[in-house]
Length: 304
Figure 1 (cartoon, helix red, strand yellow):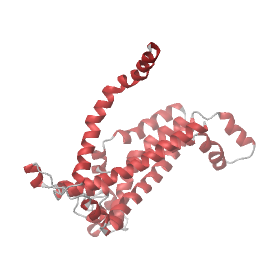
Figure 2 (figure 1 turned 30 degrees about the vertical axis):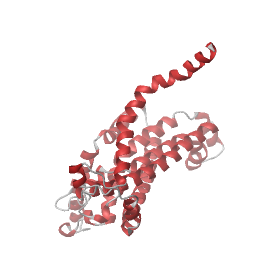
Figure 3 (figure 1 turned 180 degrees about the vertical axis):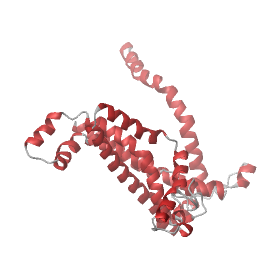
Figure 4 (figure 1 turned 30 degrees about the horizontal axis):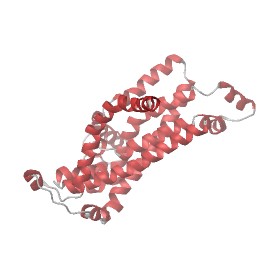
């Protein structure tokens, strides 16, 4: 009996240590999430907020959202294609910068790493306004420069009103802000590769491209898995970089993604139930991506 009690105490000890953190997570995350799910099953607007009453409508919000062609032809393609473009360009640029850092001398490596970390340290709001200024149709640096070269007409060029142009600028913004994380992470992975492997590849006659695919990528595959999946999670829920751009707050419905659409429905249209349902769908999408992330980590750890 005494042995069983000691075993139970030992089993309970980790949970007691984790209890404060679990309570904090429950208070800060699970309770708001539960409220959002609860509102998603209601026709919840200003009258319900004022009176404190509930107006349950079952799955009507989800049926309405999933039945709209706007979701399938505009919002979902915006969300998915934008995230895929950002992830691809972020990982490619970050990897190239990491390879550059590996070739630089310690002094230039430190200076270069410090410079690119400035982009990562810059708040998303500040970075977004910088990109808006660069492409401002009424005097932005890019439009003015291209107008001086005769490539565009500054008076009739506004990329923010075009869906493709809007997301091209947003992609530049997100990639510029996100590639330093990939660069530093991949560079740390490069430092773990024994130099003898590359020397053996050179002796065997492999060029730089062949050494990268046959030595570098297999050696730090877990690192690439982490940065790709984390970048995917972050880029699927981009909000600030889109909402602050001209038309991104709802004035131009063609450029909304799931996150901004949920916000606009909730706080601009005062349809909190509909906005909550959109947020739940986005959460389920991110949970699916997170599941892939966790399974990938376990798979990589089993292979090591």
